[in-house]
Amino acid sequence: MRNQFEFFGIKTPLRRELGKEIVLASKELSEKEIVSLCKELWAQPEREFQYIACDILAKNAKRFSPAYVKRDAKWFITNKSWWDTVDSVRTSVEIVVAANPELESTMFEWIKSKNIWLVRSALIHQLTLRTKTNSKRLFALCEVQTEKKEFFIAKGLGWALRSYSYIDPKAVKKFVKDHPELTPLAKREGLKAINRKSAS
Image 1 (cartoon, rainbow, N blue to C red):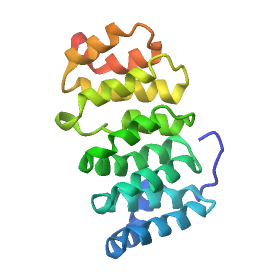
Image 2 (cartoon, rainbow, N blue to C red):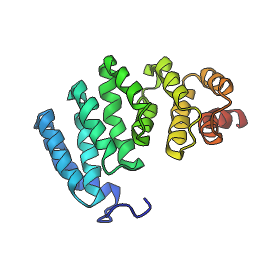
Image 3 (cartoon, rainbow, N blue to C red):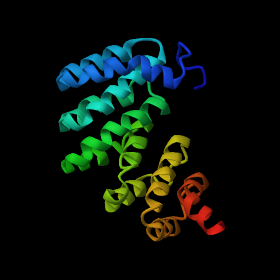
């Protein structure tokens, strides 16, 4: 974490147990109320509050409107940004974008952003969709950032490719072969599962 945030020092299992009641209670709130609550949690200095907010967003994502991604998720991604919260907010983004295909255009806006966390979020927004992944969108988003050397972007790009390689390894291998400009990090991450399988 590079000492960027204050922590209570609560381990994840205990933090989830302590936050369980508020996460469950949030199911009775409207989208607007949930976002307001999570922004209040985001304003607190200790990082554990932001983690609870991420849990709340993920728990309620199936009820969120497209506006959540365009406005609110973008806000959470670009405030107090670091990989931990960015990758957690990704969960709610994945759910809402999957339910609202018109948000594809928003992902293509994010992929061209100067904000590295929006770029990373666009790259990994389909991370756990497996066979429901829109592969055309995945490769098109990756293609925009193939030359990017920034660590969190290159790592995210490789992570997205690796996740899809479990579904279509040939497509991922072809993408890597067709894009020699990919950074060593992105290639290594993208082909990790394929290479591991070949070696076993």
